[in-house]
Length: 134
Image 1 (cartoon, helix red, strand yellow):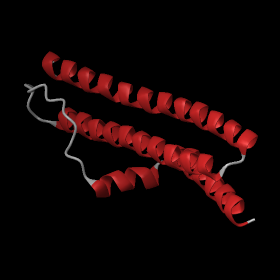
Image 2 (tube, one colour; image 1 turned 90 degrees about the vertical axis):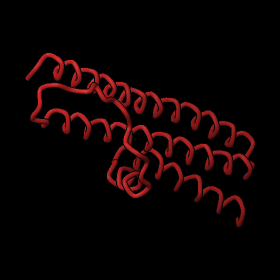
Image 3 (cartoon, helix red, strand yellow; image 1 turned 180 degrees about the horizontal axis):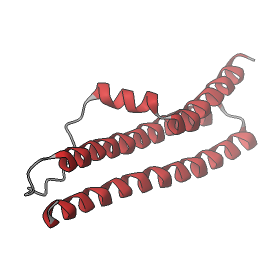
Image 4 (cartoon, one colour; image 1 turned 135 degrees about the vertical axis):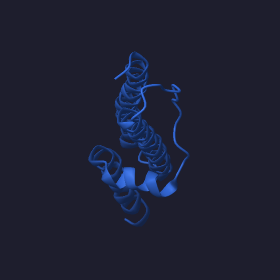
């Protein structure tokens, strides 16, 4: 393997590491923001706060899934470059074209995303139903 190819793979690996780090940090921010919103809800018991929690959870979940989607795309690029037979490289580092089907697949196959966001959405939805009908 040529030095150019090794450098290219190192560059792609750096992007993969950043995507993974961003996803981890985003989960931390989500837990912090949602905890603060739930604390506010407990003290005020307003259904409008639950709607805000629901929307914020959806946004964090979509953004986290997007980071995981990008990370998977760069892993695919890494494997493509790694398996190339030629030793020269064009140093291409670009995300793949957005695909809703692949995005949905990443969401459904990601246990941390499901555990973090779907559980929060379920609890929020249940509290919203209780708040509105009981």
